[in-house]
Image (cartoon, rainbow, N blue to C red; front, side, top):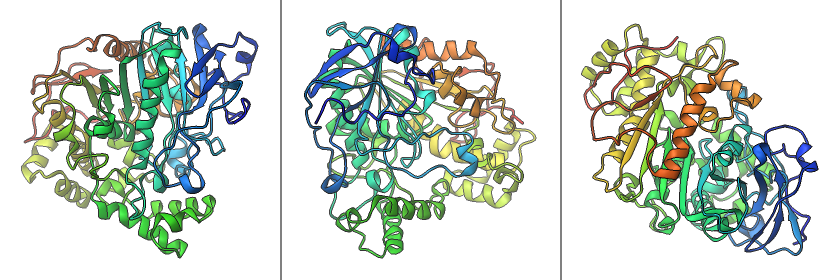
Length: 504
């Protein structure tokens, strides 16, 4: 490969400026195992390298194969802009207005980005590796809110990367390995192990952190034998370890095969042009409601990657920081504008959520008492949040672990009407990127910088010291609360502690 290929030019500058000023600053260089790269000088004087391949382009015979090593290149490869993003379909209208998801064309989508305060080999700096969310069907490392200069400013080497999504990463076929997106993530972590020292990082001091599908992925990585030893600490934000029933995932593939009029095999799908494949994926996603237990793309139990119960098999010697937002469900149910889904849900939604949560009617009565003024949609949303996030994260935190677990809740309400303390709202605070225009899509125009200072510092401290600044969870009691008072809480059966109020 030539030194000039594959850096995804045309992407936004990774220092968050939206300009090409970085091109006029000194250009740092680093040597990877596959060739030399030239980055840019970013915000706060950090060195930024983007679009570095950690695996070969997943095209042709590699479309549904495990990740293969990248080809080496001669000379110096330009690493000045984000590389191609993984093939995906866009968010539906209301979510597209809240969740930025840039698309950068190109085949070389299995790439990493690095922000470092000191690209001196052997500097021994702590490393944080970000795994993006997006329901395993959307998202990328190029989302502006994930810009990593604040971590580098504070002495941490920040790494982010792309992985295969949707049917390409998680479709279940009889003639292809399962969980290919997770195999991509493991390959990216192996790249970090083998190369991060050249960027000033210490491969023995790696913390993985992710949100939503990224946190679900980390739950799997904690249980995956192939990931053992690749990271020392983990942060799970609004996502819990899970594997889906294989039939739920197979149904998505079968529906696509029916639309495409081809067999439900990787060989047949590999012969379909990518735009046609993505159009079929978009069609089946519109017919699926994973929130209520319908067919979905996701991780499955597989002897080669993830045991049947990631919670029960998670590495017990890895310190964990894990938590949720107070009103996760308001992003899932609220953002359609006008007659929102949240407004339309009634007692039937409560009944469905109750059935999925495994709780009884007494739990609903106690939950209603704990949330005065809450309507059926709020009750259903909190029950779903219990089932999907709070309950399994608490089980993970209290599963007889040798290493400490630290719990948190993000409770600051968005300035966008109706969203409250919703899913994904904490991201601009964790990354300290409230200055990025896209951060206001979820947070509104007046998000408090002081809260970003507090939350970002806790994540840095956890990566550096192994504790975020509060006591480990002892199996009971409330989590650390960001953006709200240490509120009085109620226990609802086996449910977690809940706030006494519902935000408007």
